[in-house]
Image (cartoon, rainbow over all chains, first blue to last red; front, side, top):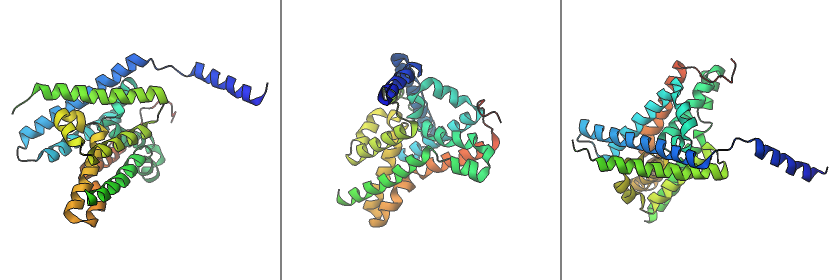
Length: 148
Length: 126
């Protein structure tokens, strides 16, 4: 058996062993979880609008996002968010909860490697690219802002 | 307080639909978490630069601001606003100062909870 044929056979074998994500249920679950998280966000937004009537809309949004981030980190610590993530797929990743979970999950996971090399270093394994792209992108947007 | 049920319905539907699109990507391309976050962050920035995000958020409420798209749009908007106000300096300070609350809270809460909680993972065997 030549090498290419062996590789092709291996790919077929891997394909048959990889657990299949059933398309429609997982799409529905993502929709449901994502929608619920956004609706909770709207609830917090209204709550803060009621508590602090003199804050601007953008400040209320920041308060709402910070609250969601804090709650997600707490739920990740309890191990609850992993369950939500396993069930909801992209529905748990795309809301800001996914960003928050991507920071808190590795920092808890790698705690045993110490505070500096465990928590502080591993904290940014997934969120690092997001922050880097965010900062670089915002600077590019700033340059665009000079001309518009 | 004026609670508008429509705000909740539209947040649910739009937020859910964005996650639905992301899940299609996950199924089709087996894209990783970091890549999908970056992709949607950049989509948010592009929407903001082309002035599409503001009317979209006006329509979708939290359905637009809770997904990572809103985070990207916030970074872009902060940089553009600060550039208009402070000039060249604003290009570099605007983005992070606009999103400082979220990033600071994510880092702070993760650090504190990492000190308090230990991993629930059974695979580690430690």
